[in-house]
Amino acid sequence: MDNMFISIVIPVYNEEQNVGILYREIVDVLGHPYDHFEIIFVNDGSTDSSFQQLMGLHRKDKRVKILNFRKNFGQSAAISAGFNFSKGEVIVTLDADLQNDPADIPQIIDKLMEGYDIVNGWRKKRKDKFFTRKIPSFLGNKLISFITKVKLHDYGCTLRGFKREVVQNLKLYGEMHRYIPAIASRIGINSIEIPVNHRERKYGHSKYGLGRTLRVILDLISIKYLLSYSHRPLQIFGSLGILMMMLGFVSGLFLIYVKYFQNQTANRPLLFFTVLAIFVGFQMITLGLLAEMLARIYHEGFNKDSYALRDRIGFSNEDIDDRP
Image 1 (cartoon, rainbow, N blue to C red):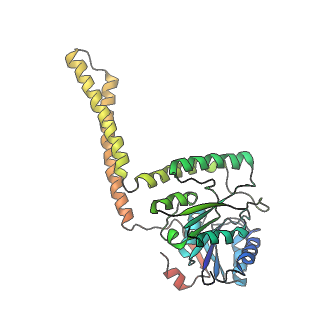
Image 2: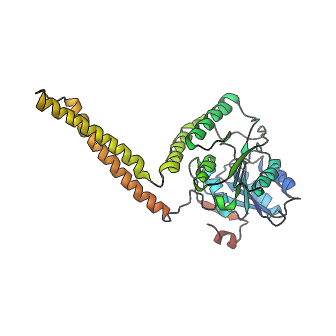
Image 3: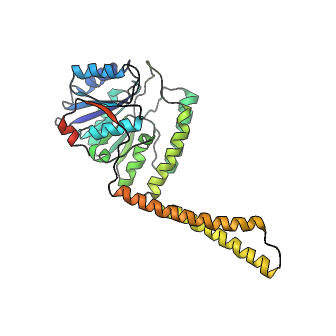
């Protein structure tokens, strides 16, 4: 415990009033029992004075490090950058809006030390608006748990703890940060969910609303594909293709039977369906083969960050060279 290095990763987007308070709370919690830690603030294209506030914290405390994005790339990209540049054996993520309580960090670290690979926070007594936040979140969590087969009460809680080996080669984009437990389940991780404190927002405004629901649903479709078919995409596209071609052949046989055995004129809509079904089926199989080739290219080393950095502040050359 004394020699363990801890990385705290915090995405920041227009939180000028909160980052200083959050820094002091984290230092108060980690300062005594944990001697070795870093706080990585990822400034995700803030348009207020958040970056200036973070620079002031870095000048005062060199344990504060800053990744400054060129524009807003989203929370998943910010967390991914924090993972890439962190050097802790244990990595904890949390929001910058003060709604996550840093006082919960020690219990998350303790659970990781018990042998868990991921510790997920559960905002059991959530301090958010009922209709616009709690209800959509409840329904979303149920849907995500059903689709991914990874049962969690709260997929949206950013307060999480990770062992380094879990996040080392994790690629995040879109809204994928909320699905990390499901993505990591592919490699047999051992995770747990624990209740954490959730506080009302005092300063600033929420960056989330009902408008991102469609993006979350589309990312959920991507997650289902990644979990079930990313290593064998031909099975989903090929199955659909074969089904369409079979329907086309059956309808074609029916048309032949009607024309030559009952001497009736071919049904034009059914004839059109027959040709379309066979053509679409062939296209689906071709798409599956292309997906197989893309999956092979990806798994053989395709690597591209989902963000662009303007500044890296507080990181040594060694930290940058050690990136995965």
